[in-house]
Length: 340
Length: 268
Ligand SMILES: Nc1ncnc2c1ncn2[C@@H]1O[C@H](COP(=O)(O)OP(=O)(O)OP(=O)(O)O)[C@@H](O)[C@H]1O
Ligand SMILES: Nc1ncnc2c1ncn2[C@@H]1O[C@H](COP(=O)(O)OP(=O)(O)OP(=O)(O)O)[C@@H](O)[C@H]1O
Ligand code: SF4
Ligand SMILES: [Mg+2]
Ligand SMILES: [Mg+2]
Image 1: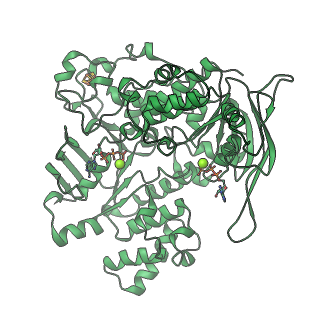
Image 2: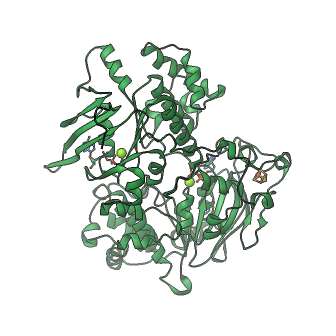
């Protein structure tokens, strides 16, 4: 297994609950794995943990390995090599990754020199990389500065930088969220093309997004997080067609789609919890249409689903059946009252 | 497109705006933008970044002065200049209100939610006591009514911004990416709220968004912009189900859905 996170729990001082609770997540070589959830659910913390980039005062239990290396015990040069060569991260905002006063080419050559190339070779490779990520006129681009490029172009530069060290694992944290849909499609096509590139060293990707539709359309497998816990895991197709955890269903039911028949949007009541909210049982109970008193004291654990995947809900037989009657009273049609 | 003789809540005719470009020359941010919205109706403006959506929204409200074109609210022409005199300015504010993507910057950090609303109500000569109904209307409870902006979530702040806009009892509500920064579960709550408000109050909505699925759900008519030009406009269902313009088709093809292949979009 390329990335193997097992029972990872991360605590921060002064908070009522862990940032991550018992997170188990895997990414195989060549796999695109989605990590979905609303703001504050712990997606970035999970990705950062794979880089051993947790807040200084955090305590972590559990195990993270990348390509067999135990990440949580890495220090010194080994940790630096892990961060600069084995794993690469692409964030939402490319401008935060690039020095505004330096040339785009310097950003790349610096990384390439770090990976052992001499200046000449690094410069040539930088141009190749910019061409590979689909930037026109790469010889000219290397001399440009960030403000001369659009957001989509800059994100390609950052991806070129991520590829410079030929990483085993790519962490994409909302990497396309700030882009136009058309540019997003281009970058996603580019990212997906990488996994067909290199034999048994084919990289794997953890693809973080708050957009369940996007994860379902783009990834092989998807993990759904809520309040620091993985509540459902499964193949993207299954998760989308047959969501089992009430939260996954809720996310799908409240996301507008382009479907031609007017599908009702059913908002999930309440709001995602913060680290100040503590729980005695299932974290989703206060917002869940299937919640029972016993859910408030049930310690969630993944339950295997027939057909693969898991969901952390004690009422799976019920939630697996047809539709939620509990939410019907709450049903609204946002487009109703059309005045045309 | 419109019934003769019917008075529109909002009628926009030939709006045009150019900006000087840094290296010389001029950029057309919006050209020949015309549309109408009936009372209780909802119009979406979609397009990629830089297509001119915000420029149009800001011209409606009067934050950007158009080079040409006219905006009428309930048949009355809006002056392109902000009028002198407090009462004329207030009357103008009652025509069109705007809600932005980040309500934080437009809310006074010193005021509680309730104070924010009573201030707006008083300014427009309306009764203070309407504040509680407005808070209730947008789903803000007792805790939030006494909270200041920094003590609320993004969704709660957006509800407050909507309540404040409604405090003025406007004819038209312009929302520029107003749900873009919100979690989907909160976005759905706000979309539902907007649907209810428009049904119950008859306010006309202009909904600016880059999200076609959201626009599909909240609008009756849609305007597709590209580089300042309206490439297509018409009933939302029709335009999104059977787009005429290649650009609209490309936008639609870019929206992720089951079986979607981003590479096919790139090739298109
Ligand atoms: N350095 C930190 N110190 C304190 N709290 C933190 C820190 N980093 C993250 N948190 C908190 O941990 C929780 C999880 O945060 P995280 O950034 O992992 O969420 P996320 O799922 O990536 O959210 P988003 O979609 O908003 O990026 C949040 O409640 C956040 O406020
Ligand atoms: N004050 C200004 N001065 C110069 N150019 C401007 C100004 N405001 C907007 N523009 C330009 O006008 C064009 C349209 O911008 P606008 O903000 O209306 O686009 P938008 O569709 O709202 O984009 P986004 O989706 O990124 O918000 C852009 O090219 C922009 O750079
Ligand atoms: S355990 Fe209970 S509260 Fe939690 S998701 Fe399942 S039904 Fe809902
Ligand atoms: Mg994050
Ligand atoms: Mg805009």
